[in-house]
Amino acid sequence: MSNPGLAIVSQTKRFPLIWNELRSNLATWQDLLPRTYEVEDVRGPLDDSWVLKPALGRVGEGIAIRGISTASDFLHHERQAHRRPEEWIAQKRFTILPVNTESGLRYPCIGVFTIDGKAAGFYGRVSEQPIITHRAQDAAVLVTKRREVNAA
Image (cartoon, rainbow, N blue to C red; front, side, top):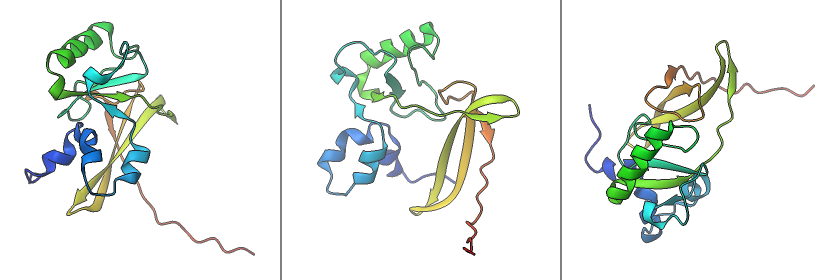
């Protein structure tokens, strides 16, 4: 199985850069997704309030955050982003709250699988650092129906 070719439009991290040109109502996405910018439009240095992401990265490949990524990795990705800005985005960083596990604090990420635009399942990944990369561990996501509580 694979996604249809058209899915590339919404899968690219650069998709938010064209939202204002679309007629679709994307208010929820605009409210929830951190602000996304062309790398060239970032004023000042890419400090630790920014995340660099490759446009077509998957499972966190190539994501870089100053102070979390190694200094050499961050510099490498920053150079790539400036050499080929059309293949990258800069996104405002958000805070991931860690959860306590048997193995210590872990930073979670939950994603949704869709089929024909409908939720079909979830996936989870956890990391020892507040950056979810290809090194993150898969985690089960269990969903239960909410039980109704009778007020007595």
